[in-house]
Length: 82
Image (cartoon, rainbow, N blue to C red):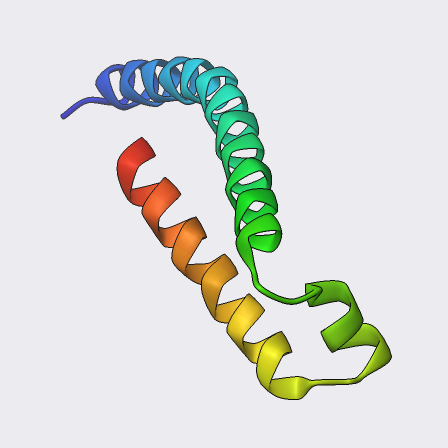
């Protein structure tokens, strides 16, 4: 492989990376929006006030549960967008 081939391959890689970065930003925005919407639904469906339990009553178990739900939602969204 000559130096010209390597330079062309790296230039092509940079172009592809630039195009992918533009698409990646829109996919990231869609993923964040999907997460916010899904977590808002989970908070509304919870049989208790999540904010009150975590902040006012300092309920660590509810905070851990909310974190686990958030991670689960993120993994599901990432898997569907991949």
